[in-house]
Amino acid sequence: MILGVRAVRSTVTSLLLVLSLSACQSFLPRDEAPVTLPPLAAAPGVSSSGQKLDENGYPIIGRMPRAAKPQATDEAVQRTEQRYANAGARAPGNSEASYRRDVSELEAIAASQRAEADRVLATSAAPADAAASSRAQ
Image (tube, rainbow, N blue to C red; front, side):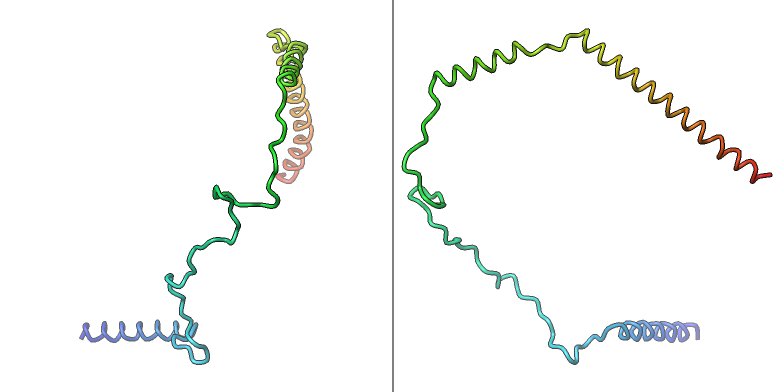
């Protein structure tokens, strides 16, 4: 008897499940043609882009250069190197003392900003505490 009741319950449950799913979307298309995905073999093959190539296999983009651009002379290179070397020598170095002075100045600024923030927070928290305590009474 128990086996028969379980069979009826499982049949009813299966029927309700199928009916609820069929209410959402029909399983068999009636008005539409079935959609089939194209197979991967139908993908077009990789081919050339049609770009013209020169004798070395590089793409030809626009007009080909007729000659190489002139290179920098040795004198121009030496002048540039000397100018950069002189600029490095003229620049003031950052000594240990100036570094420590900058760090202490920044620490003093941070401390003053921290103190100001604490002061502002303390003054704004006091009225809020008073309002909260008056509501509690």
